[in-house]
Length: 587
Image (cartoon, rainbow, N blue to C red; front, side, top):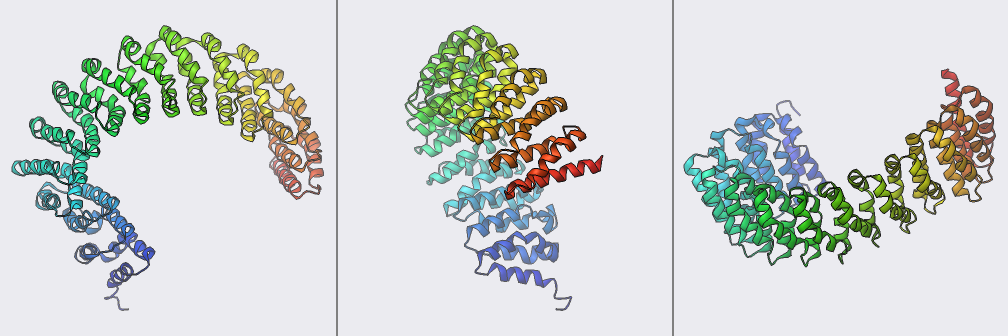
């Protein structure tokens, strides 16, 4: 092929591949568009590649999605911002396809390109595109157009701005619910670019139409608009226009709309300010907490702490706490779980007395819930309560429940308790810990579930770090040594794991005198699994002990294991011997 024809090669290959029956080939060629554009150069990309892509009527959504994504970052390959407009045509076509994710990606790419274009180019190319899409015969074009107004509007001259507001208003009254949905979900972004004078007139009129839509899918998107518009309006306008809408929506006949209100209520409170919140939104929130749909109660329960933070403690105790008590015995476990995940955060809001009097009984009832997730959610947030009521009260009221959970029939609950023990230990202090929780920590080493035994071994290490080697020497090591002769090999294996974790914390002296003999004995066990685990532990002890001990005690033991009949034992013993040799050579 002559050099003159060489630049033709990439586009010829692309055309062939894009017409290939194999979807993977078509996809690969689209993903290589930037490479092909570099080979063609800017001018040929504009004149040949982009027109070709505009005409490419591939019917596979995956290929179209990849094309929409690639074109969004294509400005450098067509000659920069000056020529950004040439990318609009293929993306306009993609905005009209049936597949939603392709349209969304095309709109995203158009927004990215539009935000880089010059004002004059936006007026000349981008705004006409938005108007064409908004007037499109097929609803898909009109749906896509709603996501482009916030890019087009700021650079438009006044006459065009009036026209754009009018077009958006028409889209909000479109016959197709999908178009109205798109207009409702994009209203916040569009409103943020509109001048304050028109915000109060045109945009609020549009918004009020959407809030009274007969489709609940449109109304629930208007709920999102409440929070967005609330932040743009002056507080008094917000109270006049947005507040009545929120109160109505909290009593909407569709549970989906009420669910959205429950989810967004905290943001809506921020928009309207403290006084209207107290007067109007507290009753609305109480209604949502007592809603007859479990999904609405779940959303409302999950926001209870955030909501209480913007109220005074008196208001929270008077209005919200009675609902919280009801929710703690709700018929839906998911409602109780949502409540349990946030209720601990109410303690700092309500203060010590109210927490002790009102919240503690609720915590206790949730700690005894039959559903494990509810119990887990309470356990994992205990420190928030400790900060408010102090450790003495916490230990008297909640600790018996924790001890009960330590023997829970669900292993995940036992696991959560174990993972929480070091934090509890640091809060309770060493004396209290020894009395109440010390025995539990040893008990877990003999649990039926491996994850619990492994977590228990890790727990011992973290406790030794928290309370120091002297404490561990008194309270952990003797019991670990005692368990090392357990008749069940799985429990003996757990002790080996505990030894390997404790050794770095305990230091060389205790490791040599107390822990190493346990591992040496294990290396003579009749079970191969114990023997190769002993070899792995010996390998981990080599850096901790003195070289003389490694040579005198560990090496002979490993040599014996390296001649074991079991292949795995020999493998791990030889690995450990290599570690000894490399340590010796390094020294």
